[in-house]
Every structure is written in structure tokens, then in C-alpha cells.
Length: 105
Image (tube, rainbow, N blue to C red; front, side):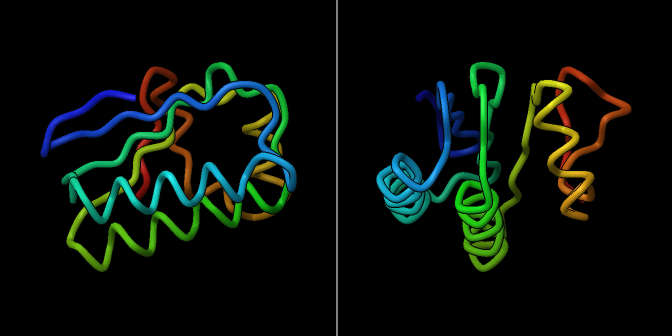
């Protein structure tokens, strides 16, 4: 993790599923509450799998950031992860026209 008050980057690794997401979500929420970054960046480059609990955590931090006047940026999803967002109709979370940084609307 790295960041300043403008942008805070998290880089989860491996599988984001029911076993790992509760701790990750808690960490993300605590970070947002403490730092209140203008942009919370979730770099999915090293994520090999995610399930609905991970999607729920991303939506939760998106809502929390909106409450604080900030945004969430999801970047570097693998093709498989991007497909999960599309199939679940959460594709609006990714702007795949910009593969380096996928902005949330």
C-alpha cells in the first residue's frame, strides 16, 4: 500500500474470496476512514481470482468514498477479472479503454 491524501493505492494479491476478503475489506475501510484520500486505487494486477465477496467489498469502498466526496479507481484487471465485472453487470466499474488505469464513472 502507498499513498498520500490525494491518492491511496492498494495492491491485493492472489485470491480475493470469502476466506480473504473480510480482512481486506476491513483494512480498506479503515484506510479510507483514516486517510480520506481523494482517490482510492485498487490495483488488481496480482489478483488471480475474485468472487462476489470481493465485488461487494469494492462496491462498499466505492460507496464510502462517495460519502466522503472521493472516488475509487480499479486498475489493471486481468482479462478474466474484467470478464467477471462484465458478467455481473458491474462493468461500469471499469473503463477498459484505458488499460493502464480504469476509471470509475
